[in-house]
Image (cartoon, rainbow, N blue to C red):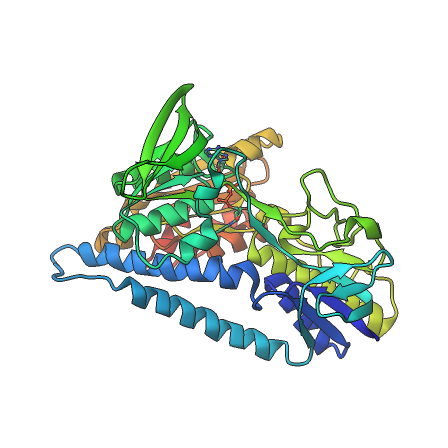
Amino acid sequence: MTCHHDLIVIGAGPGGYELAAAVAACGLDVAIVERDAPGGTCLNRGCIPTKCLCAAADAALSATNPAPGVFARDMFMDFGAVRAHMQQTVDSLRDDIATALKSCTYYHAQASLTADGAVQLSSGQLLTATHVVIATGSTPAILPIDGADLAIDSDRALALDAVPASMAVIGGGVIGLEMASAFSALGCKVTVVEFLPEILPGFDADIARRLRSMLSRRGIKIITSAAATAIAPAGDASGAYTLCYTAKGKPQTLTADKILMAVGRRPVLPEGVESCGIAVDNRGFITVDELMRTSRPGVYAIGDVADRGPMLAHVASAQARLVAAQICSHSLQGIASDSASIPDIDFGTIPSVVFTNPGAYATGLTQAAAESAGYKVTVRKTPVISNGYARATAHTDGLVKVITDADSGRVLGIHYVGPQAPALVAQAQLIVSHRLTAAALSRTIFPHPTLTELLAL
Ligand code: NAI
């Protein structure tokens, strides 16, 4: 029997569950279909468990070097307890999602699309809806190299039951560096092999360079301009692997107990997407317009599976709010879905945080992007060591870079590497997204002594 809903959401990650809960709160009949546990990559295999690992890593680093004049003894780590905390955190947040979805019909099944746009569940039910939202996320990409199946991806790295003695990380992007930073702090000897001349593609060049040198000083070996070419068992009794790579044109090898592949993520499409008339680009992402509408009327795509915006949980959530506003206003007021009341998303100022130790953040244009967009820019670089709080707490390494439009005075981008990056990013993002000027910043009274003063002009 076919069951009809106002909205069917496929995928219960941060995009899907926020959307389903928001539309259900408007009084509409909402179904959400998920084949796995609710929470998506972010909760189950990404942001949240990684932060548990990073928190353990931060604690291990500060335990070995707590503060000038303070010495710790007998630090030891119970990795089983770290994993147990990770699981408890994930479980408790899953409970929160279940509560948020209590007004929705939840189907634990795999969904595919039929040629006429209905949603077929692996459990046998056939569903139809006025609106369908595809929020099926992404999965780790795999390099087409020999022995790729011998590597672990970030999902499996988070499921390790012990810290390996050594690890080679292929890819110096956000995932590779967060894993490298955390496992290194927990006692693993880590080497990062990055294809490009610099780590952190997309980040401001000064910030990426400084982070690389800070991580290197922590003992993480970072090899840039190096392409991984093959993985093979090391051939001894240790169970280790050999990673083959070319660095500056020369073939090289290194041996490690685990090889982690972190070379990007690829979209996950429900079966039947293309045959029901939903356009997909040549990289496999669903093509959407600025309102996240696909080429099939009534069907939207949000989050990592859509071809708009970076693959970040907070982007999926913003897109969920955008689509919820359209569906609710369309259904409740009978007005056109592209009404002026629909909020838009400023993709240019989406904040990005790297939870390495030290961490980094970025919001707005990098210096290179601002210059190539034609701005005449003023660049102010402030070393963290200039700040009183940084010196008092003995965390003085780092840099903040403020990019300003020399003509209007508007702050175009703020980029940072140093202590407390995750806590400081929102300040920078508000400045850039609300188009504040250098003059406005100079009128602001920042609390002393805090790291926020790094942005005082
Ligand atoms: P990424 O695209 O950021 O980095 C992958 C890196 O692998 C690139 O630097 C690339 O040059 C390198 N690479 C590719 N082929 C290679 C080869 N043969 N040998 C050596 N290096 C090679 O992808 P990543 O780090 O896997 O992240 C995926 C997505 O997840 C990104 O969009 C990221 O923004 C998002 N993410 C964000 C987080 C955050 O904001 N804290 C945390 C986790 C993921």
